[in-house]
Amino acid sequence: MGLERFDKMAGRLPRAPRYPLRLRAQYRRTPTDSWHEATTINMSRSGVLFSTTEPVPRETTLELRIQLALDQTKVAPTFGTIECHCRIVRAEPQRAAAIIERYTLRRGAL
Image 1 (tube, rainbow, N blue to C red):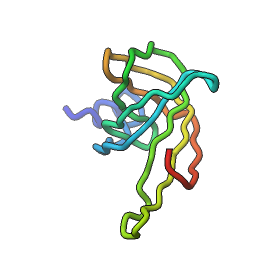
Image 2: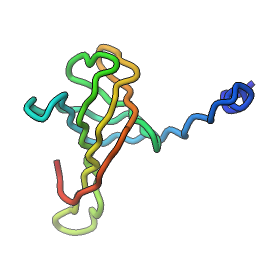
Image 3: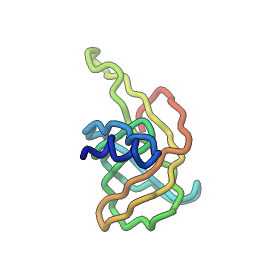
Image 4: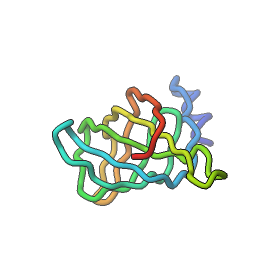
């Protein structure tokens, strides 16, 4: 039985599709912390799996910035950044899965 069918039978919404996106990212726990480098592994409309440089405990809230290349056809590429407020729902030594609770988009690189 597929996961989507099981979710429907259990009365849950199906998981959002995951997209394998390798994007430059940075994260920090509080506004006064320094940023740590990261790379996204996959993303959906509601969450992100990303590499970490240090273990991040489950239930930790983070600021996460993800860099997007908006236009690479110009001599100087144009970038955008997704700025997220996230909560860690799965933690492993070198990666973490987070639910995106809110986000904003802005022009410019990290």
